[in-house]
Every structure is written in C-alpha cells, then in structure tokens.
Image (cartoon, rainbow, N blue to C red; front, side):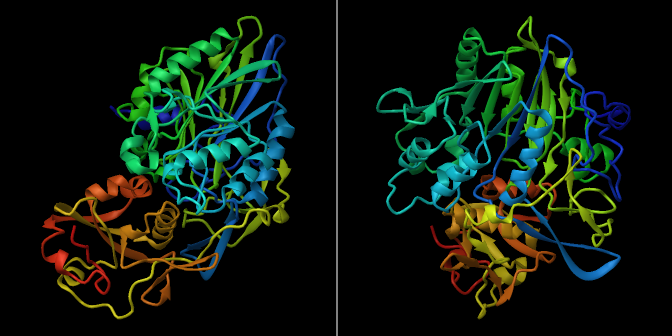
Length: 542
C-alpha cells in the first residue's frame, strides 16, 4: 500500500461519518474519541427510503462483568481507575441505541464463550437482545465442561438452548457431508426489520486449522469462506433479502499503516471510511473482500485482531471493535424501497463506542490509554444525548472468574544462564522443540494479564513456565515473585517468534511491543536440561 499524501487526505476527508473523525486526532489529548455523547441531529429518511442500524460486537469471551482499569498521567501521582464494559453498562447503551433509532440489528461475530458455564453466555446474548451470533476460532479451544466430550457437543448444546440463532454457514459434519443441522443452528437467517429483509451469514475462518488443535474440531469440515458466501448470499437475494450481513471471526488491519503515516498511536488514529489505501488488503479478510462480487455483501462484522475498523473495501463495509466487551460498532444504512437496495453514498459510519461508566471531563469519553489527559476529573457518561444509568444488579446474573492481576513465578527462583543472559521473567513456550528464533518481549502488566487470562480460558495454561496460575474456587490468582502483577510495570517474556504468531492476543499487540530478537537457540539443547519448575526461562524437552 502507498501512503504518500495520506495525512493530507485524512485531514480533508470526513464526509461519510456522523461527525468529523479527525478533530480528535492529536498526539496529546483528544475529545470524544470512543464515545457518541451528544444527541444526534437525526432526521427521518426521505419518503421511499428506510433506515436500518446494524450494531456489532466481537471477542467478548464471557467478559460480562465490569472491568476496573488503572489509569495514570504525569500530573497525578495518586493511583486512579476507570470502569468500562460489563453488562451493567452494555445493556443501557443498547437500550439508548434502540430508543434513538428503533430499527436495530444486533450481532456478534464470534469468540462468545469462556470457561464459565455456557448457560451464562446464552443468558447474556438473550438478555441483551442479540439477533444473531456465530462461533469464533477461540470458541473451539474453550475448556470443555466435565460432562461434554467435544466441541461439537458444546456448540450443539449452546445452539439448542439459546434463544438467539447461531449462524453456521460453512461448518459441515463429516459423518453427514452436510452443513450442521442442529436445533437452534442455521446456515443462514433472514430477519425483517422495519420492512427490510436482512440476510445473515456466519462463517468460520479459513485458517481454523492453524488456530485450533485437530482434536478440538474432530468430525468437522470447514468450507471456504468465499464459496459459502457466494452460495448463501445469492440464495438469500433470490428470497428477497435486501441487505446481506456476514459474521466472521476474521480481522483486518485498518490502523497500523495510517498510524505510521501520521505518527499517532493506533488507537488514536481516525480514518476516512471510503479511503482506498487504509486497510491491509493482503490479509485473509482483505483478500476475501476483494474477491467478493460488488454489491453482493453489504457489511462484514469481523473480529479477532482487536483493532478498530469502520471501512469500505470493494463496496462492503467492515465493522470491528475491541475485545472483552469493551466496545461496539454501528452504522446506519438506507434502503431504497423501489430498488430494494442499499444506497451506499448515504451510509453513515460510526467508530467503535466504549461502554463507559463515566467520562474523563477533559475528553468526554473513557479512553484510558492517553496519559496526556488528566484522569482525575470525572463527569457522568452519556450516549446519543442520554445519561448512562448503570444496571449493577444485572451483572449478578453473570458470575465470572475473578482475575487477580498476574503471573506466579517460583519464589525460590534458580538463577540460570537463560535467566541471566536473556533477562526473562517468564517463558511462553514455542510450538516445536527444535531451533527457534528467540525474542524477549517487554509487555505491560495489563497486557500480560489479559494474555494469561485468555490462555487459561482456552486451556493453554501449560504454555507458560513456571506455571502462572493458581485457582482457588472461582478466583484466579496471578503473582510474580510473590507479589501481585503491577498493571503499569513492564515484564519480560522469553519466547520465539513462531509461538507469538500462534497466539491471537500476542499478534494483536506485537507491533506495539518493545522487543529484542535474539539469535537462534535450540529448546532441546541446554534449555532442555534446565529445571522447568525452578527456572524462569526454562523449556521442557520435547
């Protein structure tokens, strides 16, 4: 992609947004970066035109409880925090969205589950009024309950008991050679909203075989995304669908190149949705969108890489937000009643909105990673001109593993060559036992805690040495050298690049991490002889 004059283009382009996207694009400070606090100037569509709002989430993974996130800045020495996400805030945001626009389609593109009882996931999506869901790559890796023998049983049970349809368009059962035919699971669905027929497809990504162990998908075959989309979208168009929505746990990077061009952090980059050179078109989702026939699919709700996207690619709008129930994305579509088609030039695109419990006064939102902001002054959160009234009692219906902040490292740590030479606090194991391109990643405590929690929920706890987890009842304790992990401190993780590429969370933060690439070493060599219990940088013999 070429980015000459990109910054100039970004500065002058904002025509397809509800408001200018670039007024808050500054290195220090910002305003309303992840919020829509003001009442919109909404006018009813012209005669013969219908409006439809499509809202999406991704990668919630059982994070139904409020997250309290530490914040700091140079002007304030005292510790502080901000509350974001959780059903207590998510539900009020959705109610305001529906009150404002009336006709809303709410979907989730995957990574629905966690190690919690699946029934809490079903309750969450039902209570919050979702219209359709699909399965994400990490859902195949969730630790199975004692009475469940396979991912197939887990998904089948979820679909059968769920009040929200589970859309599985390209997931086939090998024993039948057909798309899964479970109660509550559908290969597609057509919903009518305000007189508009909306067809919904749910796609398992093509790279599922590299994202999950084979034992986790026994009995399944995943059809190519493009092939499945062509078949189902054309069928639904023939059945009268005026809008086609694809849900898939596949992501696209639409921020890193713009970040490099503008010298801004990725999370502070705003962008013109219709600019042709913003997104990574060589990525799997980029290639999928480039190959779609123009006009076949109107919107793709994606996920996985945990970067924001609100961009048109080959005429299709891609929406994606952040993980762990922190945000949602939405856009307004307008349908011509005569032609039964979306009017592309009228589409109004919104950036992801955080589920804020309150705002920082200076910024009128709760974006917490900008340390140039005074994080102490607070005001009530608003969305579309209405105050957010929290519903804390709702969260009591969704028990969650209580994550203490961090990793346990053996107190009697034995100093070894690997610890001294590579200065690692903990090891993330490579995929193979042969030679590896080693790296020391310097991770912020808050990021490390998130990675550890995901791996624990996906039954990948053995990937970390020494064991970083202590579970007591419903509480997970993570300690480093006997102390709670400090979210603001930097920790050193020794690993190899191939292992990083296999971890979806690590991939998402790799470009922002301070890291050292080391020479190749054999994990089966002298490290294979190390004590994997008492040595921080140890790896087991393979």
